[in-house]
Image (cartoon, rainbow, N blue to C red; front, side, top):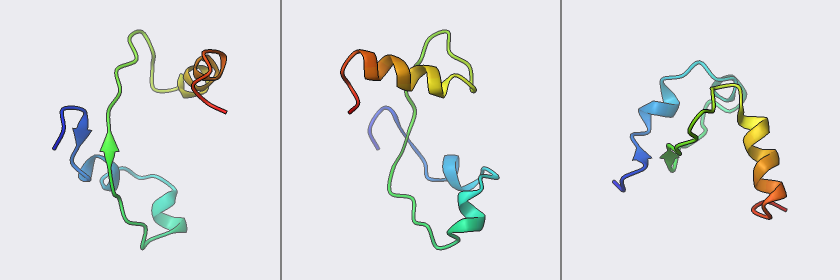
Length: 57
């Protein structure tokens, strides 16, 4: 397991809707990325920043 890679249980143990929609969904990789100062609801802000920086199409 690489340094930022997490065990699959970090995904499968959460009550996410994907478990209802696709119960046979297979987790291939679960990763953690440091986002200093960001909270759990800041994902849209992080995506916007990546787009501005040219990291997303």
